[in-house]
Amino acid sequence: MRILLYGGSFNPPHLGHIRSVQTSAAALRPDRTFLIPAAIPPHKRMAAGSPSPEQRLDMAALAAAEVSDCEPLDIELRRTGPSYTSDTLRQMREAYPDAELVFLMGTDMILSLESWHEPEVILSLASVAVFARETGREREIDECAAHLREKYGAVVYVLEGQPVTVSSTRVRELLPERKGREYLAGGVYEYIIRRRLYGARPDLAWLRERAYAYLKPARVEHVRGAEAMARRLAERWGADESDAAEAAILHDCTKKYDRDGQLRICEKYGIIPDKWEMENDRLLHARTGAAFAADAFGAPEHIASAIRWHTTGRPGMTLLEQIVFLADAIEENRKPYPALELMRKAAFEDLDAATELCLRRTLAFLGERGESIHPNTARTREFYLKKLEEKGVAPIEWMPK
Ligand SMILES: [Fe+2]
Ligand SMILES: [Fe+2]
Image (tube, rainbow, N blue to C red):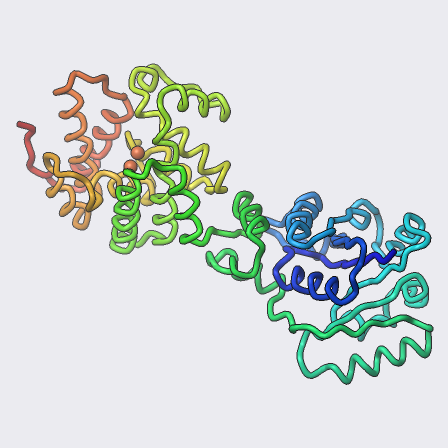
């Protein structure tokens, strides 16, 4: 029996790791393969969005799922104190007394192997497999392999294979820029985004594909229009364009659910609908959408709140909230309705005036139809009317017919 062991910090595990395991498994034909996430000493932890040991194990499991007969092993994560490869191999030897253990390592690791803790123990318990991480180091590796064989009687497999051109460090740098998805297995990427590990922000093409799956087909055009408008408004008013796009892409993500569906989502996320939301369940999708976007897509607070307030608005909205509120109302695919063109124009001239007009129009519309009016809608309109007065800006002239 041959067991392939691949240790690393896997922070996060990327396609380079997966290719390494696949290539070495093809050459060595192990019966089983284990990915072993190493314990990271506390001083090496990155600050924001650092994954917990459990999360690194979860990600290793998702990466392992890409390789046949491969699974993660938490022995190094469970150990306390300094974590040594020699200890890991002792444990593995105990569990598999008759197997050949093959320890897969990167170029840098094998070249520095003699400076590790108990190299003689490592090389007596396991064979070593290595392949060139960088090109042009084959000779160095061959010499090192010969030396280890001679000095320790080590079994060293030098594998042919593509150099790995990405590092976890690079992937961690790319994720907050909405990049780096191409270096990760789909499951690992989704896991990271859902928890916003490493400060990751979703690739917007990926997010669209995922989020549109929750829409009725007829609503996709509206959401596309809202995204385009939110981007234009963000550019005009100096907000983060990609955050505005993200919020717009997600803003109606629970809209398709009927009253029962909305109430079920409310229950799941502990949302207690108020009296007006119970009377008019169309209002609920803003609240359920915010909770769902946070849960399923890891939407951070400032994006979730833009979803939360996109129907009624709220007094003192953030710039992003105001942009999403208006983009939803005035996007280019909206069918014409009273005051729409005035709002579209105003949105690029005075955001508060456009907001006030939008709310005034909504109040008139609901009044005409005899529908109940959510106090937030009325309160928000009051707030922006007062804000205009304080700024010395006259409200836009428009009277409902
Ligand atoms: Fe909506
Ligand atoms: Fe909408």
